[in-house]
Length: 421
Image (cartoon, rainbow, N blue to C red; front, side):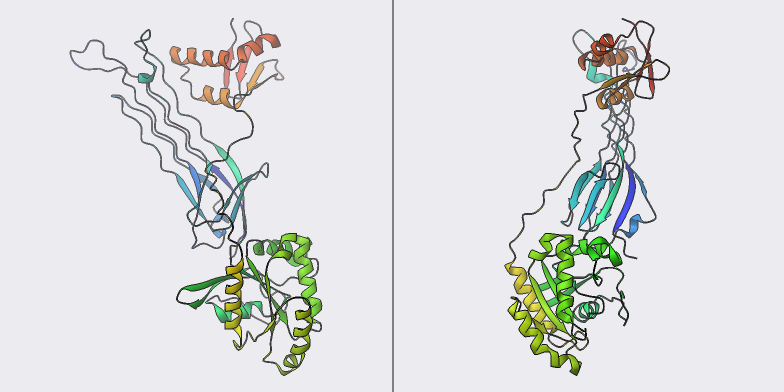
């Protein structure tokens, strides 16, 4: 089943905890600190796989969680870092934050990667806190917390040529005749309910990737007949093949209608190079109308080719003409890989408020993260956290707000402290 939209939950791995430990060995009275660092938590990474052409694998499984890093050990042993969680997506996948709709990345190149949730770094062991004045540090760090978010994935197929036209114009028949694609073909409107992708081989060294977009009708740009869902798949294409139904009552009116729908959806679609194919010339009635149709289209600046998708007549010249048009399209600069989404807000910022019980509540990315990485049972780690409160200006801000001895101060929702000056 073709799926071009999905919403998933991702969570990176937490960093492993650093260890507070002192060397123990026979005949060594005062072994120094030898607590190892924790390993890094696993990242969640989206990676393009050119063999995929749908988001169907995310239809049923919607939660993806990377492994945590392992804790540090004694004798300066570093915990093992977790492997990244790789999520394979087809080329043309756009990634957004489901909560804010903020753009995170556009994955179009095979092998391109995007880190959507960064694994927590491993906490440092007490060997890192040795100094000339502090030879026995009873201080270590817990691993950094994980990142989690909901993502909205949207697929826009990547093809060289987008095939457009009204329902039953012969788009699927054309695709089937020039590629190994097997679209459903029948004599009723909206036979094609999902885009089809096919590769046409012109010779040993030349191929074209073609996308058959379901037939468009009036109002498609507003979603009539699911038109807006399908129109986005031709935004990626470099060249358009417009197939006209020669049996239609007024093929030129159909031609104008489709062009108008595309322009209303995205003005840039009207600027794409377009080849027009007059289909169904295997029917005598259509063959009689071809000269008049060709004359009208030439007057509008097009060089139409009369074809029969059913018999294969003239389809090869169409493919070579499309290839020629593709070569004339200027090469676009390759999109930059977006390795990691960077928040716009300064993580050092914080805000202070009071809850319904009158307790002080401090919220901020850095201070809440530091609280989760603190060993509250170790006096040295608590002192480091107190120093951070001073460095970030939180202590002064609490005093200005009117905090008093004995007041409860919450760091986020999880850590409750008591204030003493």
